[in-house]
Image 1: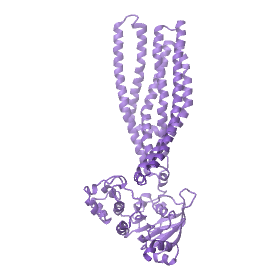
Image 2: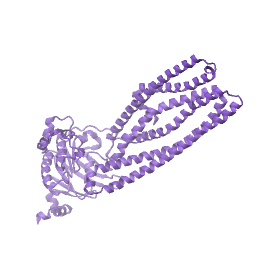
Image 3: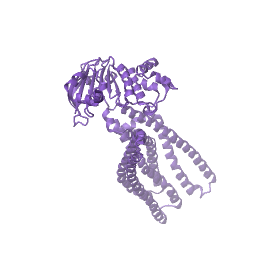
Image 4: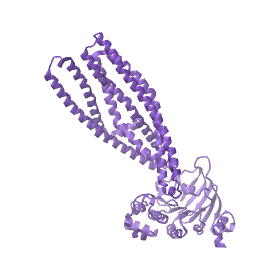
Length: 573
């Protein structure tokens, strides 16, 4: 994992090494003050060398000006480097998420993914910036200060140094506990984000049913989990800091007692002892910096682990030997297809279908029977468990995903529109389309005149998920998008079931135009929309139980006939 982290430094090598040079300068300059202090106490002040005292003061002032420059570089350019690394990680993560299969999004909430793209990567970038700086400054300061303290009095230095293992031992013992606690804390933040995203997305439903209190209760559950996880994290952090602070306080006691004995036995002079007391902070401060760095380290490592967890999720890949199919004719075959979402319970069981190119084929039946699953299998959103699906005689595994999906247009009940203009939403069907092609697609979807009636026309912003449009208008836009794509295969998955009868009749005209000349698979509960299909199949419990034309199925007197009589009994009466 370390190699993967270091890889993000490579584009920023110059800034990184300059940042390390600045950190080195800060570490070296930090040692000068006690060295000058010792020389003044032992030589310049007792010998009243006022000129040297002034020179040393000027030297220190100049050195501190240099340190100010080094600190500015680290704070500014170091953070810029961290932000750029964060940008690259976020781009890699978002790009990888775009390649993940449908099943990944079935099991991961949007809010949780957003947390990994934002909060987690911010902590990673902070570690990327401050981590090397803290390590180099602290390491150099510890080594240099130890050597310098030995030049003052090696015996007293060894006594102080002997206390360090206790500090390190406690840090190692408590580090693992703190790391685990912070990981749980981060997971709880992701859960809150997911809860908030879901509640805000469904705010209109919440208001319609007066269920604000219920949403608050659901949010409070996640909030309480966050408090509990964060409390554990702070407890671990409190134990870590209090224990390590106690050990560093013991350093002061040791210096006082041991230094007193060394002074009493004349093994150290008062000037050297004073310099030693001043210089000991050169040793303790970087040790404390390393200890405090552990907290940032835990956040950064935990964030990067969560980043790697998604990056290691296998992408949706073309099968070995898959090739571009070009423009399909549109013949679809299911040969003994079995599929189970969880790998255990079959949603489809031995399904066989044969849809000729250019024909309209309808699927009807009770909810949960497997109709939508069939729609998802044709574009290869999921892999079949057994059997095979063929387009123009080619098994879909032998076709590249891009070329397969380029030949398929989908209009669903739940229309998704982006928070942008009408033009951009239609253009999503084919990004290289001209304005004339966009207008033609809108005309064929019977929404061009409505768009022109808007003050901003095609540049009208439609809001999140098209909230500023009616259900029928949103559906027309989705139809225009498919018109622009112009696929030979069309899937209509409950495309009009959420619309009122008057709107459905208008939309159906646009759909009839869209279906002309294409192989069309229609999923519908309203049998009025499928009466004219070339063939109709009834699917129940993952199996096709009846198949034929509308007239044949009504005459058969089975499930389809019962559904038909139930929906049209008033009309028959």
